[in-house]
Amino acid sequence: MRLVHRQNGDQSTLASNVETADSFLSKARGLMFRGSVPDDYALVFRFDDADHHSLHMVFVPFDIDALWLIGDEVKQKKRLSAWTGIGFGMADTIIELPAGAAEDVEPGDLVQLSE
Image (cartoon, rainbow, N blue to C red; front, side, top):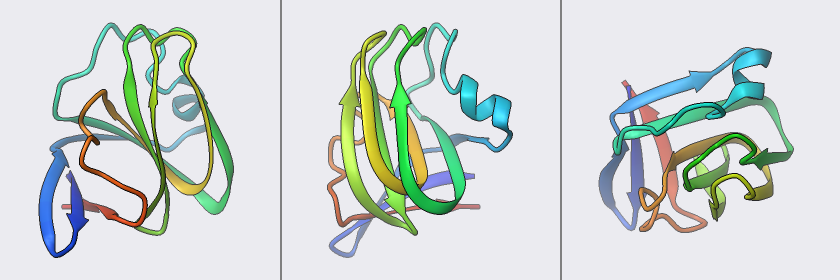
């Protein structure tokens, strides 16, 4: 599975090492207690409906890029700093990527999981 970014007719791969957080425990844990993640990594949180969802960086010792999506459309992007970062947004999917991985992603772009 890979994470694909579509913008103005162009397509690029954001991550080819994609993990999903599907259970309550995996969503609660997120990236906590990991020393790092590979450059081509993404953690995807899927929710039943679009709602306000937050992220925190407690026990995450590295910066990340976070994307809040509704459907495949990016609604918000934010760089969260190690240990202290907090982000909020309306989404049915949240994606966590290594810092810098979503540099070219902007609200309104499409991001999709692809087999």
